[in-house]
Image (tube, rainbow, N blue to C red):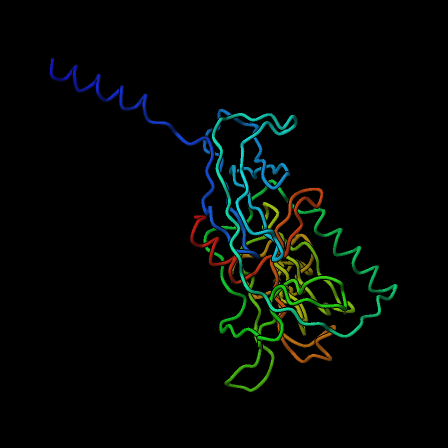
Amino acid sequence: MKILLLLFLFFVAQSNTQVQNFEVLNPQVEQGGVAIIRINNQQLLPACISAFSKVFQPNREHQVFIGIDVTAKIGKEPVYVVECLKSVELSQEVYEIEILPKNFPARNRSAFNATAKWRRERAIIEDAFNNGGYFEKYFEGNFIRPLDRIVVDASRTIGDQSSSFGEGHGGVDLITLNPATRKHNRPVKATNKGRVALIARNFSTEGNMVIIDHGSGIFSIYMHLSSFGKIRDEVVVKGVRRLNARDIQVNDTIEKNQIIGISGQSGNARRSGPHLHFAIKVRGEDKLNDVYVDPLAFIDTMNQYVQ
């Protein structure tokens, strides 16, 4: 009889326990940050997340990453789980993302001449982002910083307004001076596993650049490199197997911590001096919510909330 009573109480407790259909893992997000949402109830699938008057499709692990612009309006925004195609609410649960203020510098830069070459390069870069694996999740575990020693150039941080391009600085400029050698030729490492989306050579602004697609609408960008990282392919020459070293190229799989280049001063860094421009872009398919976020804060947030 006692056992039956315990079983009854157990099932009553279970029936009163409500499982969250979805959750906002970090409900308070600073400007320039990333909001992370997870759909828990797979019986709702296919389901999407509605926030900021937009509908976001989750990746294959039911996660949604929303970049928060550095100029985003301060305040609270409701978040719903909805049917993807019809935007009909699938649950009565409503959560909120609270956007908190963060101070970003605002400096005016000299005028910029947008040449025909520069415009062609914009189209190439945009095409690389458009072909991202938005529903995949290539990254694994924690994100890392691209240099062994991180020193941010205070004059060029995320959100720094530039009249040259009519938009804010999309990343941080990291000082690349090697204290031991007094040279600016430090190895640049991939922040996480991903697929090479673009190898840019001698672009007007970016110089030599690597863009890595980490899936889920997350891209990391590394600019002003002096050279690209190497991959060794096995080749057979006259029946003899050899390892042939080549530069990394588009569609190569890159592992976390793999060297993807050597820092330098290509592109417009020829004027400003050697450094690594490091950026993280978070966007949805079809350019939905296309945002550059604070890359160093992004790494900290992802490592705290995503395992």
